[in-house]
Image (tube, rainbow, N blue to C red):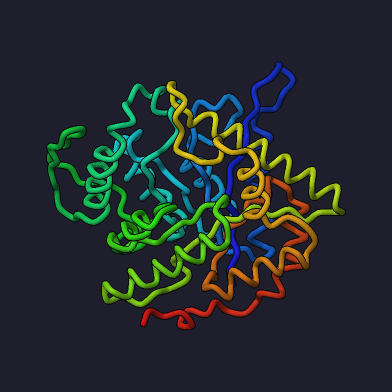
Length: 344
C-alpha cells in the first residue's frame, strides 16, 4: 500500500505582528519530512475567497515544494479549469513538471463552490463547457510540437507553441475527482486516474472502485489500483476525549466549507447540510480517527476491497504524520498489489 498527503495550508490575515507565511512554510516542512518518512506524494487543493487563507495558487506552492524534495510526487486536487486561462495554466504546469523531473500529477476539475464562481463573475452554468474547452486546449498544448490555433466559445489562440515541454510524455498524468456512478464512468472513459473524496463512506468508496475496475476493463485496459487515490482524514487520538474533540472539529470545519458552496436560494451540491444526524454519522465513519489499531482496521477493510493508494489529510499535524509513519505504515509496507484486482 502507498500513502501520500492531501490537503491545504493557511496564510492567515491578522495584525502587523502576524507572519502570514507561517502556514505555507509549515506545509512545506511537513511535506519535506513526509518524503523522508516514506510518503509517496502530496495532493494540494485550490480554493479562493474563503476568508481563512486556503491555498489559491497551487502550482506556485508545489513548485516551491518541488525544489525542496527529490522524489515526492506533486499533485493538484484539483485545479479548477473554468477559472484559468488554459494556455497560461499549461505553461505553468509544464514548468513544474520539467523542473521537478516529471513529478506532476495534474488533477483537474469543474468547481462547485458558489462563492468562487460569484467572485470570478462566472455563471456556474458555464462550468461544464468551460472545463471541456480548457481541457482540450491544455491537452493539445502539452502534446503539440508544431504551432496550433484554437477558436472556441471562451478562448481564442493563434499560431502558438506552448513552452516549455513537459518532462512526462505525452503529458503529466491527468486525475479527476469522482463521487457518483456517472462521474466514475466519465473518468474511465477519458482514460484518467481517479480521486475519491475524504467524506465518502467506505462502502461507497469500494463500490466506486469496483465500478471503475469494470469500466476500465470493458474499455480494454488493465485496472491499476495506483490510478485511484482515496482521500481519508486521519487523527491518531490520545484517548476517547481527544478522538471526540477531533471529530467535532472535523464536522464543524466541513460545515464551514459547505456554507461556501450554498447558492443564494439555499441550494447546495452536498447532502451534508440537510440532515445533521446523518452528516455527523458520515463525517465520523469516513474519518480514520482513533487508536492505531482502529485506524489499521479501517485501512485493512479498504485494502481488501481494492484500495492500494491512500492520500491522507492530517490537518497539518506533523506529530500525526510522524506517528502514522512509525506506528501504522509498517503494517501496510508490502508493494501495492498491482495485479491482484486486474480487470476480468
